[in-house]
Every structure is written in C-alpha cells, then in structure tokens.
Image 1 (spheres, one colour):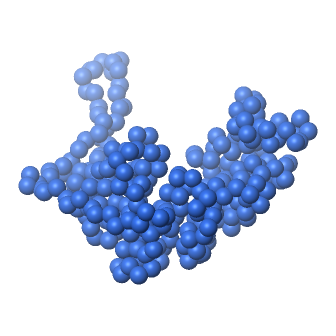
Image 2 (image 1 turned 135 degrees about the vertical axis):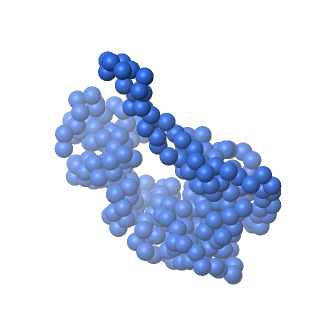
Image 3 (image 1 turned 90 degrees about the vertical axis):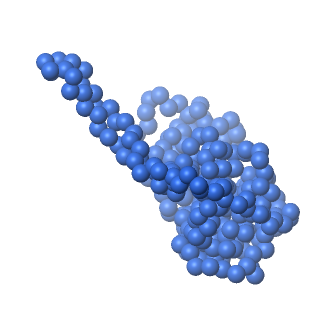
Length: 288
C-alpha cells in the first residue's frame, strides 16, 4: 500500500521504536512507516488503517507492538474475532494486562457478554491502573445492557470515580454511560443531570453529551442556508455559510431541579450486581 513521502517512521512512539530495533534497519523503517499510517487513519478510516496493519503484521509478526496495532485496527473495523486473537498474542508476548478491557469488549462484539462479565471479575482487573479499571467497568456495564439488565448496568457504573468532582480523562465517558443507562431505564430527570455533568467534563468533545442534553430539553438544531441578496450586480460576495438556527427551545419555567443521585458503591472494585432486580431496556452500544 502506498505511503506518503512525508511519513518517515520517526513519528512513532519511542517505546515502539525500541521494539523495532530487533529488526534489520530497512525492515524496521518499513514497519514503522506502516504503523504511523495505522495511527493516522484508525479514527477516520478504520478500513484503511486495517490494511496498513496487515502489511506491518506480514513484515514483523513477532513484534508485540505490531500485534497490538493490528488488534486495534481490527477492533476499529469491527473484526472482533481477529482483534481478540491479536490482543491475546500481544499479551502472551509482553505479559501486560493493559489490553484486558478491550479484550473483554471484543467478547461483547462477538455476542458473548457473559464472557465479558467473567473477565470483569477476573484477578487481572486488580492489576490494571485506575484508567483501566474504569474502562473495565464501562465494558461490564455494557455487557449488562447487552443482556437487558438495565438496573444492574446502572449499579455497575456507580463508583467513587463517578461520584468524584475531579475531572480525569475517563470522566466524561463514565458520566455519559451512566446518563445513557438512566435514560434507557426511563429515569429522564436523573439522565438529564448526568448528561449535563458529562458536558462539563467533556473538554475535547469525545462524546455527544451536549446533543443528548439539548434533545432532552427539546432543542432542535437545524442547518439554515443563509443567502445574501444585497448585491444586485452579481459581482459581490456570495455567502454559502451555514448558520445554526435553534427551534422548539421552550423549557417550562417551573421545571424543578432533579434530585441528586445516591450512589450505592462498594469501595472494592466492581459492584456485585447479580441480585439487582433487572428491568427491560434497549441494548447498549459497544464500548459502554
């Protein structure tokens, strides 16, 4: 696959570059350039990233970083069986548990939420850092929703991390998942509160919490084509800008603030939710 001339391979992480030092210099450069393309494309063009990952894998399948990159490219392309195989290979090579949550999410993608829940209760979870444990909690809640266990999903997300006022990289996604589960359970007032909290913590726009909040408030955003009719000679500036028009934005003046959510949380890891009464709900999306 063609690689732009401006991609040198030097752009990759220094730890990955160090792993590639076990390869001949020319081969290491080729692998590095393909890995750079995987990183560039994985969000916008997952299939393209997957193609470059297959090239890197063909060149250096015994390098753990290559197996991991191939796993994430397959995961982004929803090739969950292939992704799981690559993640397992990378874990065997390194002994690292960091991939445990995404491996569990692959089990969800393969229609095996029970297996994902088994992984959520495994000893490996205790070896994860805080970010990994939060990710595992999101996966476990998603698995509960896959099984139509909405109340259990809500309890799973209730945690010290959710209740904390400090904003961490995972805060917006955790609050968003909690709000979405509440809404699916018909608890609209509480859902609105938590979507608002998600908006407050979502500085980089990683979720669509603001859109979900506007939807709950009855706000509809419509693209309006603005035409400039001021120039009669046809030589003036022609504006084809799109402004945002807000319609149906009335909110009842007497709307009362939602009652605060009481989080019943165990301080030790994931909450045991097997005996929580379940209610029917919509199946959750992958990745929480």
